[in-house]
Image 1 (cartoon, rainbow, N blue to C red):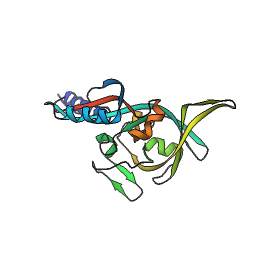
Image 2: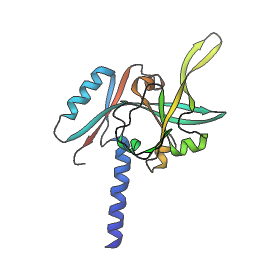
Image 3: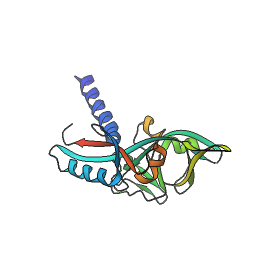
Length: 193
């Protein structure tokens, strides 16, 4: 009985952490512009049984800081509706801020604790994202790059996320996903999963 209780609690904790970042389901969309995606997301939020529905995009990039570089999954999120597990245990430039009302400003990035440790990052420092896509010129391939300020370091308690996931605003992340001004997925969270 004790083992079942512990395993049941472990399962619930693991599921809440994973689903707090990813959603209970993923709705694939092809080339939905940002404004219609926000409207569709709002409609889903009013559907019975759905607690929230967040539009997002995924892309890949290399995160570079002072000569160190790591591969990362870049997730574009609505700046005011960041997945719940990414807003718990935030380390900002000011303080540790466990708040669900954190807003990601333009030009800012959220990185995980393990990624920050591996790169030697602190909140307030600038990192460079380098996209695998870019422009082909007469001089050769030129990757797309952009500098972002680390707004906060998150710690969801799952190495899979905090070692490789970086969150940006939807418009800032879309060039890294190869989908300018578009959303490719919705992540609904159910009231009773």
